[in-house]
Image 1 (cartoon, rainbow, N blue to C red):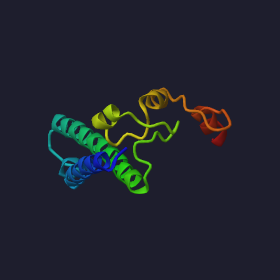
Image 2: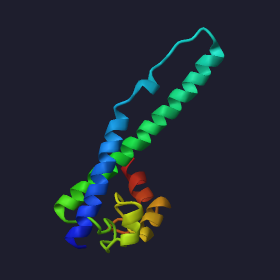
Image 3: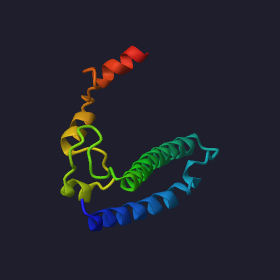
Image 4: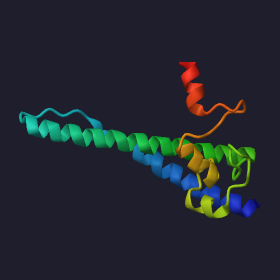
Length: 129
């Protein structure tokens, strides 16, 4: 990957980091409000749950964006963390904070990653418990 491409991805990632950081500062939606009407309280609890899920999703995304910026800094950006193959530019254009090539991402989504010893992630977690 050339320097121009890295600078482009870095600019996109820094803009996304700023956007997410600003959004995560607003936590007014998760405040617990009391109302005299039980139905209103149920509705507010549902809205609060949705706001918490959104904050969780955005904080995970922010963590991924920061990780991508660290990979740019250390020179490993654009290389799959699992198979160590180059991640295609088309994928990086779509999801610049990705850690994996499309093949490894699909395997991760199905929880099929294996360790160096051949154990799947589920086997490792089961033995750790």
